[in-house]
Image (cartoon, rainbow, N blue to C red; front, side, top):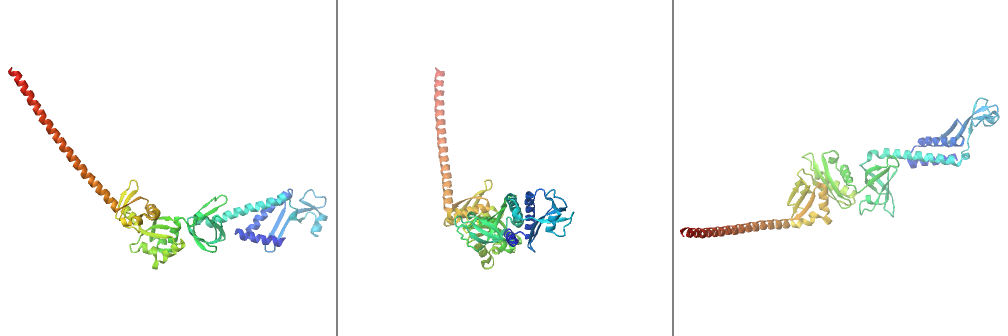
Length: 398
């Protein structure tokens, strides 16, 4: 029994990443409660669990008396000497307990107590292990893929983590034994059963990958100002250099494109556009629409929107497949972007000019007509005045 117990104890410790010594203390505490449940009157209970000697004993320390024992804390001298021939009245004797004699309720209580203790130990271990890794990137090994839901079980430092399908890069096929980098988005239910949430679609995974691959970003010479990402398809990242002698984009790309290639490979071939950040919003917006050329950017600061004019040949490139390029540029810059081709803007301007000229001509005609009416009215007024004057004169003469 002892051999099987200590083998199970070692296995339990390995599975839960708990030392055998810690487990022994927890088991002793649980067994003490169980013994007291079965022997409520006993005051001196001794539990000896020694993994080194593989000793497992539970005993009640009883007082040796000459007469009939009053309760379970006493033992008659005759019975005591069958256990220890050197026993004497007034001395103490350890009476071993057969664990098989425990009641079912007491055994179940001990088992539940150990489970509760293990959960608390696992909770503390998990928090200690990942508390300082929130919002960081770690490398984990793919252990298993669930066929039905696609959830991947990853192993990191003997701890199982679950990468759900919606947190995996679209189109990526993970394989058992593969090492992948994941971003720890947070730890939920810290007070009960902590769950470490991980992702490969979060935009900050890209940021952490650049920090790992680009020394200039890690040491702060090159700064990442903003990132926009459509996982599995495209990412835009805006960088700037704090040292005029350091090329921000060149640092990110690396010698022979080695740095950017490593990041792209880790992200399963996801395209990455690197642009130089600018405090000038119009300039930044124009750069964010790369690889498209931009003719002009007209800003509306109040509504944080803008109209971007591009050559007709660059319109589809600026907008991107299903509007992806424009959407990522908008997220990167924080501006709502309306893209228009140069020919449309030119046509609008021409229409506006023609409308203004037409309006001006119309206004001139109306002014001419008004002048003509006023002149006619003046002539008629003069004629009427003369006629009235003549009539008055004739009447006066008569």
